[in-house]
Amino acid sequence: MIEATAPGKVILFGEHAVVYGRPALAAPVTHLRARATIEETGAPDVALIAPDLGRQAILSQVNPNNPLAAIVRVVEQYCGCSLSDGYSLSVTSAIPIASGLGSGAAISVAVIRALAVYMGDGRSLSTAETSQLAYEVERLHHGTPSGIDNTVIAYEQPVYFVRREPQPVIEPFVVAQPLRLVIGDTGIRSATKDVVGDVRRRWSADPHRFEAIFDDCGRLAEEGRAALAAGRLSVLGTLMDENHECLVRMTVSSPALDRLVAAARRGGALGAKLSGGGRGGNMIALVTPETEAAVMEALLAAGAVRVFTSDVG
Image (cartoon, rainbow, N blue to C red):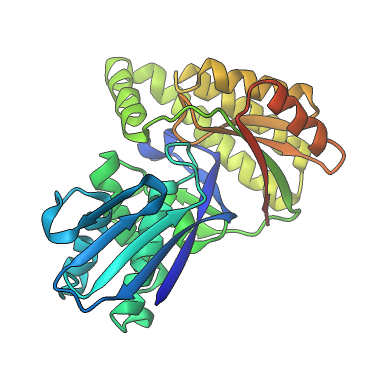
């Protein structure tokens, strides 16, 4: 049996604006992971199993856009080999679906890692290649993804990311002082593809307004990187608050997210913002050891369906 895992992620700064060439900062959520398991069966096909969703299918019989089938086909095409028989592929994940934590990209990275080992070719797929293959899968599901999810998940460390052609700017970085984040889940699923598409329509209708918002987001990401490098947590919190307001102006927040962000601030968070596609999913709050419990309690009281913590750095 072969197993491989990959973490979730949070966007610290720059969601949506990153699609339009502005910088973004993201970090892995290492204790929330997707897991892929491959077992040899000798059968003349491949069983695709997602027990969390109660789904099971046969590779040769599913639509090519089936999420697991798509990953297998992308790896086949890249490696110039057949991966169409002889094993079962099962995926499980502790990462909530459609919540802004990178569940889809984490599953892709975990499956790609497991398939590389199954082929006996694990060392030939670099982190960069794994990330690129996961990005190809992301394109099938999200239309015009920025590439930041697959990048931070494959590299498993905080990254500064700028979408550029032919290659994005990817700069892993180390924070001067570890961050403690509280993550609040609205319990509302939101498809990233739909939100990204809606932002693009609004940008097309009013490019001057949206380019100004994207510029503000890019500036905050740059200032956030400097604050992280200097260990200036209070400054970082203020920048997170400002980034949330940009996302409100972008129309990607929601009443549930705004309610949790406000509750976190009242509970003593240094700063708080939505994280990910928005319109649902999760928000993040920067806390200290002294304020962590109060912020978590405030989020639950404000309607968060679950609250958990993550360390960055």
